[in-house]
Length: 290
Ligand SMILES: C[S@@+](CC[C@H](N)C(=O)[O-])C[C@H]1O[C@@H](n2cnc3c(N)ncnc32)[C@H](O)[C@@H]1O
Image 1 (cartoon, rainbow, N blue to C red):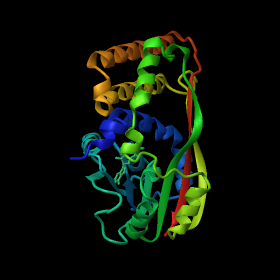
Image 2 (cartoon, rainbow, N blue to C red; image 1 turned 90 degrees about the vertical axis):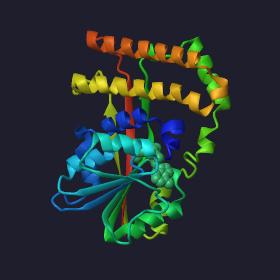
Image 3 (cartoon, helix red, strand yellow; image 1 turned 45 degrees about the vertical axis):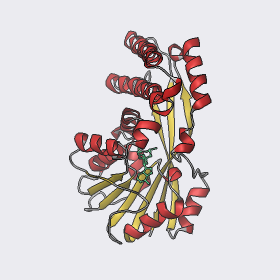
């Protein structure tokens, strides 16, 4: 039972709800054009580091004939993914020692995983399990735009809470988070180094702006609530990462303040008081062939 990532790094709700939006069908044309896969083929697609499974679900919708398998080493993510998506074969396992024979898959894919795993293992294992001519897709989140609504600003109590957490938080080092960061130039060069050919790169822009009338009200509320879940997970995680420095009362008070602020943002949205807060993710897609 391994729950290190979901307990100490990013909670299930944070990853599931933010990725559900990132891989909403509204953005599927951008991804499908960058992935350049044959939608009519019965492809064997394998997702590495799938977390709670939002991308794997999107792949099932976008490539209905494909057989999709997805792996993560976090037991809680896999439990959640199995409960929410029955059309994908989710398995618990290690990306550095994949439980598959050589030449098994037509496509491997990962989203924001490459920077956490030692590259010779991350790419070496993918090239091993891909069939000759198979496609490796690496998705990497790059610098985007994040403008919060005014009502979300921290008050003094919240600022002090986060100042204290910053002082004691060593989870990035403890769990090797982002131990292998790479620039937009380094990722394709590294893939070439590990044997991939015909490498191409491209970018998808995922624009999440609740007040933009092009988004339905249910999607706008999902955007606001995804930020709420991320904030609540971050608060909760201090009880796991640094329990000696925080009390449950402090955490409960933070959660109460946070919920009140996001409730206020939803009321503003429902009254039509535009805030124009926005979150634009830039997702780099690097595609290489074995
Ligand atoms: C930033 S999260 C991304 C999760 C998912 N791709 C998403 O976008 O929601 C990184 C994921 O990589 C997984 N991970 C890290 N090292 C791993 C390894 N050696 N084997 C399998 N999964 C791993 C973590 O458990 C976590 O789910």
